[in-house]
Image (tube, rainbow, N blue to C red; front, side, top):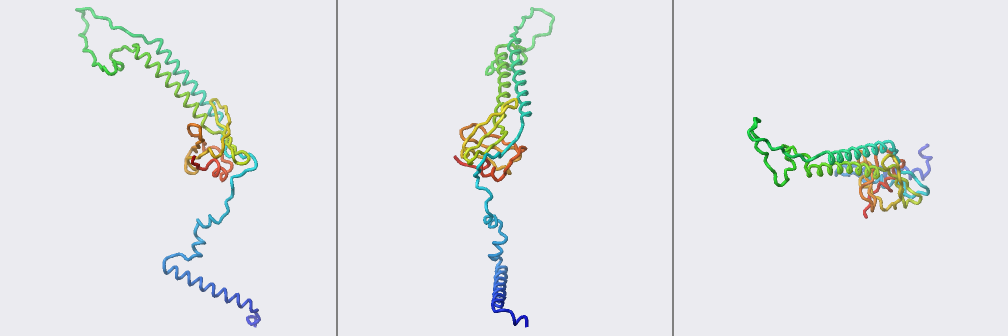
Amino acid sequence: MLVLMLPRCAWASLTWTRVGFSSLLRGGLQSARLGVLPPFAKQLWSPSIRRAQEPFPLDGFVNRDVELFHHERSRFFRNVGLFCLSQFAFWLYLADLAFTTLRETTAVPEKPGSSESPERPPAPTRPWLGNLFNLTSGNFGSAKWRYGFSATCVTVGTLIFVAGFFFARRSVSRILLLRGSQEVTFTTYYLFGYTSSFTVPLRHICCMSHRSEVAAIIPVKIKGKPFYFLLDKQGSITNNPLFDITVGAYREW
């Protein structure tokens, strides 16, 4: 009696559901027989389609200044500055010591008929080096040795100091995305822990590797500036999606 009392619209919906389910089942069995997934299964299990249907969380526009990256390392670069300065002073002292104390020596002629051991044969000469590396001669105070050793010490000390300076200048302490998402402010270090900031357009920033592809340092290139700017992954990225579509994006100039 309850079945007979169902309205006509309910019978129509039940009939349509039964017919639709049977056709869907038939299509699935036929697709399985052919070795392919039915259309509804593709839409249900394909991750690319599911990702494409999800809305993108950010458009990159901000109506206020947003900090994207921060890494405080003042104490580390203070120690780097002390190390570079001490190395530079040490190598300069060594160069001055070599330049002022090394003196050219002259061989004393032996008297004939002396009871000393017979004279050793002279060491083979190297004309193309001018006997610079002839250690058996014992003449380390010659002009070539004195000037060469002093210049080498000055060069080593200068290279250590310059390398430390550029490493500090390219190590990023803070990245600030300015209001409107058109400009970015970078804060980098000096030796001894000091910092300075500069602002560049966002379109002039190119991240050479995604943050998930590098182990320790994210390299960022800024148009018109030599060398890469280094973002240590030990620092904190405050907004990962916004960072990826602004500073962390790859751009071609």
